Length: 157
Image (cartoon, rainbow, N blue to C red; front, side, top):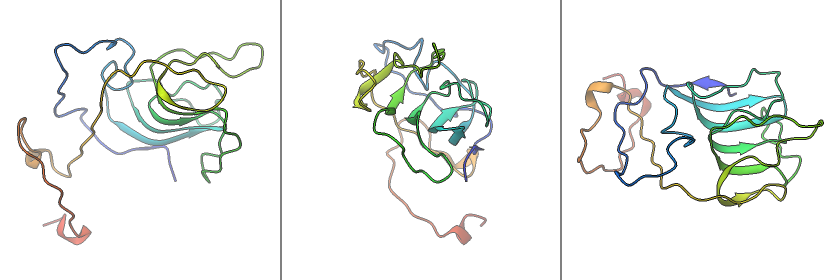
């Protein structure tokens, strides 16, 4: 399970506040592409990243896939966390090299939801990601969205 690119064609819509700041290294708005889910590589993992950001090779241990739901010391195939030191909710786009055989402790994060070896950073804003089975049925900007759960067999109709 994992290392899956689940969308095609990039974003259909983006709504960015005219007063938004820090867009240069934002994990969503500074890169484009399709949604990559559960991007595991050696003992690292990232739940959601974008394909035009950096996606580490499966056997690379470079701590450089950044996005939402990250951990630098985990078994990405089983989800087993080996330490409470390196998990973090949102990491910004950056080069995070290993220095002297040590993980990147200076990784730039958003917020306070992170492991003990990482430092808090400013929160850039709120994120919402919506996906649709068909591009033509995706609601237009300004549409009030409702929760709807469909049976898988109905999706092909």
